[in-house]
Image 1 (cartoon, one colour):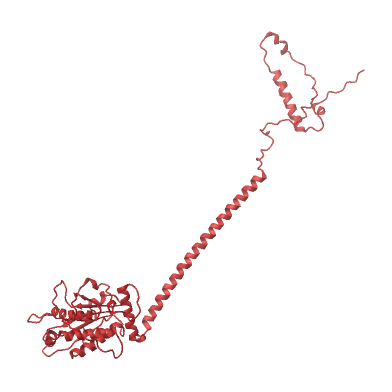
Image 2: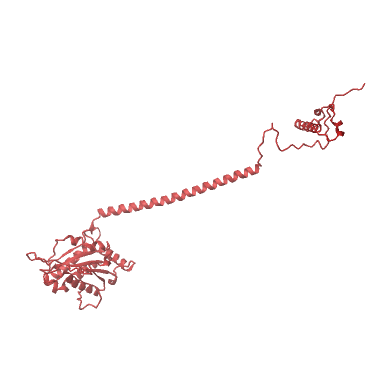
Length: 378
């Protein structure tokens, strides 16, 4: 009697070191192979025998050779019951990406800090300039309000005026004393110009413009003889706009009106807008002193708005000292105005020299009449 052994199942025929999943895959492959053989169609009578039912055979044991012991290749498509795993990223590439992102962040932070520093520097500079300008404006305003006109000596004021006028003429500062040819003086002949304004007119036709021009030309000639640069200007001369000089004097004569009594004398005025005690005051006082001494006329102080708010005062440069003089009344001072023009011009010239050379006990400059002066074009 032979001992019959039970058939060996595929699980028992597998080596003990094969994974269960591998066994399952192999069983599925064998089942699919048997199913495909049983469903294969027959095309000839010879195949009828093949269509006879086949008795189920005993399961054959799973035999694995040396080649089958190698790991089975599993399709790349995962099984339905297994989750889809994310692709693995090499650790080295991940570290490089993180380092690159950190480097870019550091660069952006540095650029942001640089922009903040630049903005802070520019803002601080603007604030500093604004504070300096405000401080300077406030200080100058306070000094203007609370500083007395006599704070500076008249000699100092005159020297500053000369230096300013020299700078305007030459374009560069020079050391005092300044040569006379670098010191420009303006003389305005009242009512002269293309407007043909005669000014005041007497009944016999004597005009103020003719008297003014006669005296003004003599003043110009005398000052040029002293070596000064002198401009003879019209009443509304275009050069008066922002005119810069060491001094400017406008020459006029008073009305020819009959007041019913004798009215004689001269008037000298500065701009009402200019500070008292400044260069304009010094110029007006020098002219009044020397003109009165030369002509023996009385000085009057009934100044009109036309004198203190004279249009030329508003046109010239603010640092140009200026004064206006009324030579006398055309009715009662007529003889002096029409026959003694040299005396009138001498008083004005000496007054200007007094202002330009404020030295105590300085002898009056020798007056040069137009006839003795070198020929010059006005």
